[in-house]
Image (cartoon, rainbow, N blue to C red):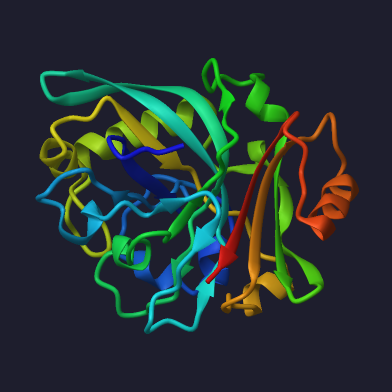
Length: 274
């Protein structure tokens, strides 16, 4: 699917322990939070506007990752992405309505001196990944269909397939359901251009208040292998969001060995690193 008219945001720090593993916790020392488990910020990864500089480059692919020339520390970031209708009133965001979800790879460069989160997230075309298989979503209320899903990820190099991120329940996010949506709405309206964060309201205005946003809601923790293994040309990245009532972790690992996943109850994103 193509989302060229949809603004793209990610949530930073919504899975306990991920920022520390990624070496990014220090980036957010100056960001004030009301509780320890609160996500740190939202960041733009795509803004459909000629005013957006590098963020105007469409970065999504469902089958390819193109590494940047200067980076040798590129990692898979396995997530769930929500396609949301945005509700406005007087140019303020007053609501988000999730309508679809899919497996997502928030593929990131480890760039310690980056001024903004977005500088690690969009370095050109085929920067990130969104599964072509998206599922309809009625909302994000507790007890809804997304609650039974899990996130798994795998890395293939030559004939060797390894688990990259911890197999994690979607409900394991620090902020989820209506609490997450309310927090994102607040950040869209009130987040400032301070430290690693950006003024999101300004990006929405520059994009002429788009009707929809694609929002990746946070990366899972890595396995020991994933924490220390970086992508190389020829590798394959796999992110799988699957119905945990239909499939076991072992089922998904067996599918990953062949890089083939059925469509029923599974949103799979398989990308070749070129």
